[in-house]
Amino acid sequence: MNSRQATTAIHITAVLFGLTGIFGELIQASAILITAGRATFAAAALLLFMARAGHRPTRPDRRTLSVLLTAGVLLAMHWTTFFIAVKTGGIAIATLGFASFPAFITLLEGLVFQERTRASEWAVVALVSAGLALVTPSFDFGDQATVGLGWAVASGLSFALFTLANRKAVSLLPAHELACWENGIVALLTLPWCLAEFTGLRTLDWAWLFVLGVFCTALSHALLVSSLARLKARTAGIVIALEPVYAILFAAILFAQYPSARALAGGAIIIGAIIWAGLQRSAAD
Image (tube, rainbow, N blue to C red; front, side):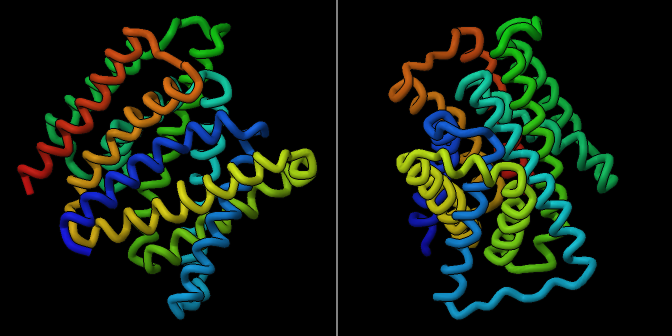
């Protein structure tokens, strides 16, 4: 893959990530079933990919397994809370609330890895917080959209913790194998809570779950990993920050879900802060 193909791949990845909330809206099922179905199809697709490539998953030792279990639990929490946010507050609120995760990473990295937080990173935290205040429909928890935003922020926090756990895991296993194990763990954790619910799924919901698991999860991961072989992580991060833009655009076209001007302003601040942080880091590198 050359640099031009890598750039195309990372933009496709951002579009696939943006479609995640769309499928959360389309699939008529609970958030935990969507999570279980997504993880099951993704793990199966990744296993098939590795088998065709002649790669057999390694058996993790006890230390690696503990890291994988931690990452799997956090990923299950992230996906479940995100789909609850979609069902409760709508796609725009869910994706904009989730977009707060870089601020959580900045705060948590300093605590977990004792890394010094620069003034520019604190500025990003402040901007993201200001953006979230604007995105908040009201400060009344009787408002479904506000409750949805709360779930979305919880999704961002759990994803930040998952990202930090993956910093440990990525040095222990190859990326595709790591993703396969994590998706398998998510499936094992969530399937027991929703097995009976699968019998009531429509054929169309099965199709949406397949697309969500294979394309928006397994394929997007493969594209992300492949593109990172050519692109800097900072550059990839800037493109991935456009995920809420794609999600809001798709939601407007497909479901006529239009965020308020205030929410759009807050979203612009959040996305702008993330892109600015990526550019600052790229310049520093």
